[in-house]
Image (cartoon, rainbow, N blue to C red):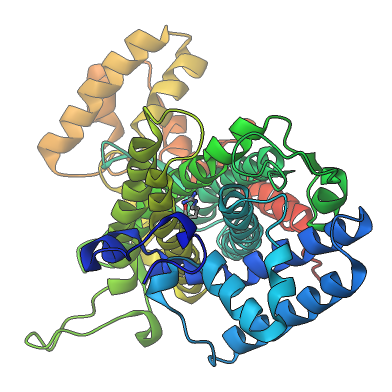
Length: 463
Ligand code: ARG
C-alpha cells in the first residue's frame, strides 16, 4: 500500500528496508510536544488570516490537544509506516477530526516544521542547562566560601607549584562555568528566529502572517530567508559546541575528583552516596560518578563532530541527511544535563581533608617562589639571579632531605651570605598563600570576596 500522507503518485509501498532506514519516529517522538505547539500556532494563524475557516481551525486545535493528551498518557500508537512524528500526529488528527485535519498542512512543509520543532526543543534544553549550570556555580561558590582559607597545593604539570586554597581552586570552575553560560546565552539569542512559514524551501503563495506565529512561539522574529530557514542547523551546532566546551570543563573537574579521592592524594572524601564498591576488592571506594562524567564527554564531542560532518557539503536547502541531526543532539544535551547534576551532587557532597591538603601544600618546595621574591625585595637582586640562588638553596634542602623552612639559616647563608632570619617569615605555605593578594590571586581574603560576589550575582541571599 502506498503512503497515506504522500502516496498519491505512488502505486506501491516501500521496501521493508526502505521503511527501516527512512523512519525517524523511534527517536523524533521526543518532539511531540514541540510539534503540537507549532501546529497550534500555525492553525491559529491560518484562521486569523482567513486561509482556513474558523470552525475547521477550531476542530484542528481541539484535535491537536487530544493527540497531545494521548501521547502524554502513553495511549498513542506510533507507526513506523508514518515515518516521523509530524505525520504520526497528522494522521491521528485526521482520524479524530476528519477531512478538516487535512487543512493544517496548508502553507507549511515538514521541512520548516522539523526545523521549528528541533529549535523549540534545543531552546528548552539550553534554558534548562543554564539553570543547572547556575546551580553548580552556586554549589561551588558556597564550598569556596567555606574553604576560602583551606590551603592546598596548586599544581602545574601536576607537580606541586605554589600553595593556593581549596576555595580558590573551586572558584576557577565557577569562572569556566560562567563562560559556558555565556555561550549558552549567545546560542539561544541567535537561535531565536522562527523558521515556520518558509514551507518546503521557497516560502508560500498564501497570505500567511509569520510575525504572528513567531510571536506566539516566543521567537524574536521570523527567519528572513526561506532557503536558510530549512537548511540551517547552526542552532544545534552551537548548542553542541557550547555543550562540548562545558563538558570539557566538567571532565577536568571530574578528573581532579578522581585524583583527590585516591588514598595517595587523600584531599577529598566522597560519601557513600557518591561512591561505589568493587565486587572483588572489599577495601575499594570508587568515584564512579566522576569517572562517568569524564567518560561521557566522549559522546558529547561525538555528537558535535557527527553533526558537523552531516552538515558539511550539503547543498541547499533541506536534505534527508539532516534527519540525522536529532539523536546526537538529544543524547548530548541530555547527557550534559545528567553530568552537571552529578557534578553538583558531588560538589555538595565532598568532604575536603584540610589537614592533608595543607601538609601537601608545604611539600615539594612549593614556597621557593616566595623565597626568590623575598630576595628581590630584601636584597634588591634581579629576579633571575634570585631564581638561581633559590634553586641552589632548594638543592641544599633536598640534599638534607628537609623542607625550606627547616633548612638551617647557615646553610642558606652558605649560598647567599646576606640572607637573615627574616627569610623564615615568608616560607610557610600559609604565609605564602596569604601574600597572594594581587587581583585574582589566591589569598583567602580575595577568595572570600570573590565567593561572596558570585553568590550575590547568582542571586543567593545569605544570612
Ligand atoms: N523526519 C524528517 C526529518 O527529521 C522531517 C522532514 C522530512 N521532510 C521531507 N521532505 N522528507 O528531517
